Image (cartoon, rainbow, N blue to C red; front, top):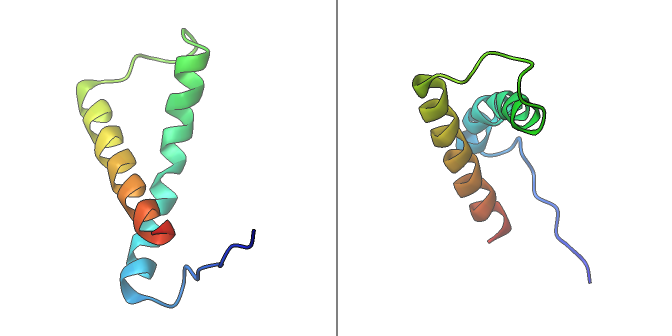
Length: 67
């Protein structure tokens, strides 16, 4: 089984999205915080809402990339 690579830099829409994609790094801290609770302050409702929107945005982008 072979896969076809895709370019992240040639499409204007995709290059704009790279900034959003880089924002996904913040989701990693949420994953760590939920796996090891008690080491950081609780997530606010605003942070939660932003994380959910970001996760959905990234998921939609990935789904488009893989078809």
